[in-house]
Image (tube, rainbow, N blue to C red; front, side, top):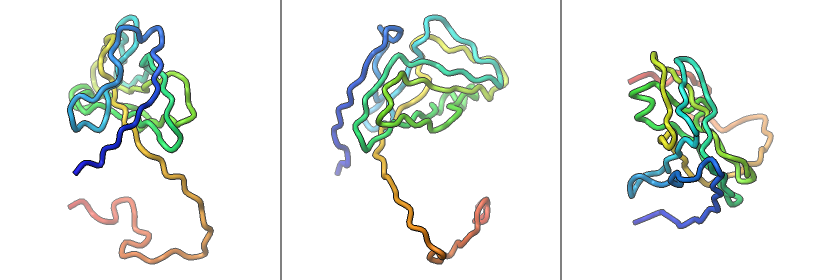
Length: 153
């Protein structure tokens, strides 16, 4: 049984993104589409440094959806490079270029090449909540325990 639904999202390819592949799913069951670096020249991110890397695309999400910019596990494991504000949120009313804020937690400089897959983009539905002020909350087995209160094992 498949829970997949088709959703068509308008995408604008910016001039510095010409020649790069549009975001795409790498496998049939991938949740995220790869985002690529739309840079003219290689960009070096030193250890401890961060960079806003352009992707060369802008999108028009329909109301009720968001796009989440998430790290690529291979970059994180092999190089210590990840998305700093993970997941970054692209709101449905944003029409500017999607940029990926990368940080290098590794011990060596990391060089980003034009067209390199730097992050993944996950399209997700959004639930908008309303608050109901209350003087008490329903009890649970966990209660107010947090920050490690359930242990490690």
